[in-house]
Image (tube, rainbow, N blue to C red; front, side, top):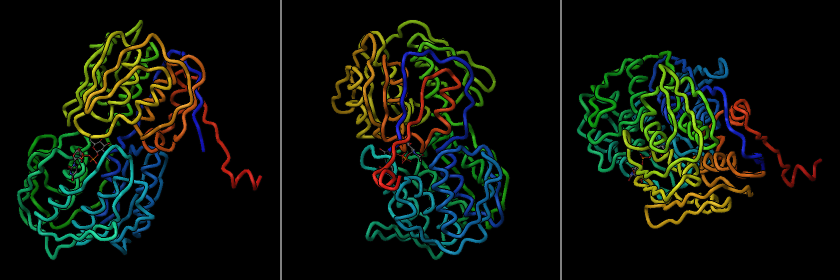
Length: 427
Ligand code: UD1
């Protein structure tokens, strides 16, 4: 099992260049299925979730070519099946976008219930509700969801809970449906807008993405396109917090500062200087930071995917901070790991109470999910001594070249490869 080994206590300095947004990429890549000719996708993040979704598409018959490190060319015209089995999709939550994309293109899809990060019950009832509103029928048997429609017809879709996945899947299924679809109570995250822009560049007619109501007029065909994915808001936010936590001075570039406003606002509240440029933010942090209150909400609220990283930051802030998790029901699993480093955190229901300590001390910890893993990295960068982080596969699902990027900022971090029992026997 591979580990990250961090000698903590070094300030981060310099510039880090942010990659393409994971949560946009894992929707845009399956959306290529809808096109009648090849698509070229640029600014693709170099992360294992992208490799997984690209492999799944290849399994369906699509031709996927790595043009360079950040560009994929995908030809969907060679797809021969609409079935993605459990072995293919088990590592990845976002494989559910294949349901909407395949249904939208071929009128049918069969996808095993996905895996991915485990932070509570992750239902897909609203995705199914959206498909059914458009005229599809579904069955769920042996962990496999099958959706089918003779014809998809536009309709009003009301999402009872603001859901990123259901909004994206509804768009994918509706984009070629006959007539007019309106998605109400839609999610407004930057990656929702990015998917809509991508589909529009293929000839779709989607308006209102980024607001509560998305309006889609179905079109008969979608063509191939060249499209560049937006920068990753959460990767950027993670480096901003890492800079703040280590008392550093870091320029986070290739970002859209507007997408980072809520993160910047919270950092400023804590006493960090955040300067904004056209495509960069600079984080300057000195001295011990102040407590703050965090309440996660769908966009434009504070992103739940930044919650664990902020808890790591607040662990050494002056005073008692409160972190309120309102999106996921089980997103405090990492708290016991932070406690191993000396953090004082108690959890009651949806809230974590963080009593800032003077400093953290190194200990072996594990990533319990992707963003929890990022929190361990931030804590390890600050802690006195050598922290080892296990389960780093979670982190590599969503952070490209993270060791290299942190080392360029002056962090003392290495990836230690541990041989498996079989490898030891073979050696
Ligand atoms: C996406 C992100 C994830 C992020 C989350 C919220 C991807 C690949 N993942 O996940 O990193 O934490 O948005 O910003 O983009 N819900 C239902 N029924 C459904 C679907 C969702 O009740 O059919 C509920 C969920 O239980 C949760 C809430 O809606 O409480 C939000 O979930 P959703 O926005 O759908 O999250 P994902 O799209 O899975």
